[in-house]
Image (cartoon, rainbow, N blue to C red; front, side, top):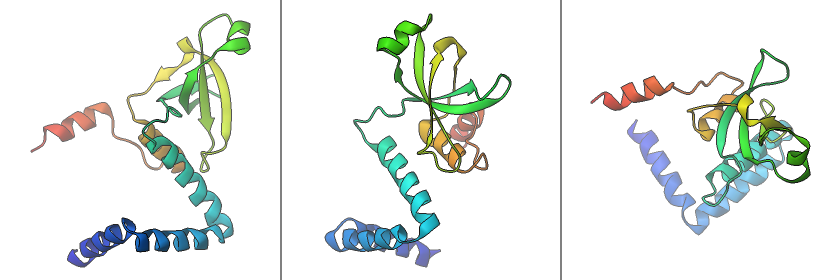
Length: 153
């Protein structure tokens, strides 16, 4: 346990200086040469960089909607309020929702969904991305589970 902790501290220290950035560039270069891994790694890295960007409004909220048909639900991300010609063509307030595909969430569908048809989720965008990337294997805790965990000493 101590060796693992020491290993991660040293890796963190290296990552904060020039040598660390050089090593990380070599690591990413190697990953970029691996056919299947480069797609998955690049997609996940791009999504988390976008989400983590402090000024980014790429994914604002996680929502659930009936897609691809009634009775079947998908996770989506609100990317904004529909404006312009698309909004003018609809009768109700419409929201831009990006519905990612699993396991590569950089591809997906842009849907213009009436606001009343969206179910806004309490989970964070990061938790929703983990849910999508893991194909539903990693399920975020419910609001009640989070509250119970905070109460424990």
